[in-house]
Length: 359
Image (cartoon, rainbow, N blue to C red; front, top):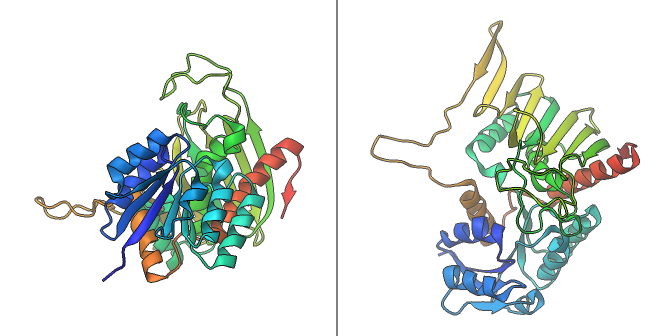
């Protein structure tokens, strides 16, 4: 029999309601027993919808962490508080799933990793883009060596007009940045994971504040408030790795382009290449002819049965809880997430100074 894992949720806003709590609720060995939010009504609502009958509600996360019944904490707060809450939870003998990015700064991310090592508790970061069918198929192909040495890659996180206008997304102080740290982080994590390459050498960055003052924007979630738009609208990075590989990262919430797509990667190797622009495409040369292979990633079986309905968020939650129960490594390792944060910070730093950042 698997043990019951008792989870506490810190931050009961959009990402908790949109991803974490619905996915955890589907797992038979999980009980959500504690909910914390600085707005008490949000915690109460979450507890009523997802909690056990005796679930507790808090407005101070430190009080929640004193509860010895809680095994696992999910940190679903703005980026600025990721580190302090995660470290406190680890030191309180809890395993931690922290939403992406790992932290607002690389220094904070290092503190989180140090705390995980010091306490021996598990720490993972919410990069759910690893868990969709395209990503899992391509990762297995990369691990098998189908692409050969991957020496050039692009990490794609481009929206035409989809600036998030709720919460603190536009607040630089709370988040640390805009699309680069919000969606660029997913694309970079995915790309480095496929390449299995976490040794950056040099980073150059460009960051743009070009569209934040515009109105009548045709934005997907309505016009943003120029007064509150304190983060970049686009950011781009050129990353060279120690082994000579090159990664180009492109991120924007609003860009005048038709070439859109996020949480995607394009890979170029010595044996083959791959991209996610039209499903999943793997390209190469065989029998002196060029080919493009498009795997059928649908999970449909016979006409009357639809299998494989697990979403990336559901799969992420299940594999995370399995790692806790079975005492195995999580899919997303904190050492990997740290490198992502270090590169993102280097892009911002390079853009400010106009100089490359050396690792």
